Amino acid sequence: MSQERRVYKRISEKIHLTYRVIQGGSNQLFLPKDKGEGETQDISEGGLLFHTKEPMPLGTRLELELHFPDVKYVLYPKARVVRLEEFKDGEYYEIGLEFNQMFEDEKKLILEHIHRLE
Image 1 (cartoon, rainbow, N blue to C red):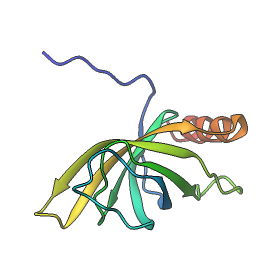
Image 2: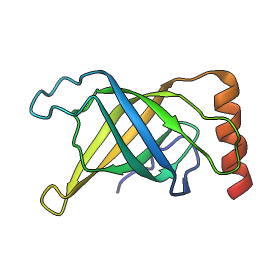
Image 3: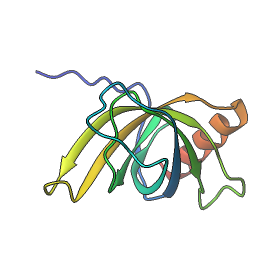
């Protein structure tokens, strides 16, 4: 029986994001573009899951640009790739990210946004 490992509550939400690779991961089979974009599937205070056409190795560090519909500021958290899953023979990928560097006010805005949508 599997045990739930999530610490933070997730909400399902589609948000367009852009990313910039700031440090490559340990698996060099995948070489992501320096910049890219995708759409979130869900988000929590601790990270997010998004779809993109580019695979990227576990451990890759990204700087994100998130535009929440109810937040007038653009958020720029940094995150680390903790999950990679391929779909439809490489047509798209699900990338799981863990936030690992964020200002306190950004963390607060994400948490407030999540609570508004619960």
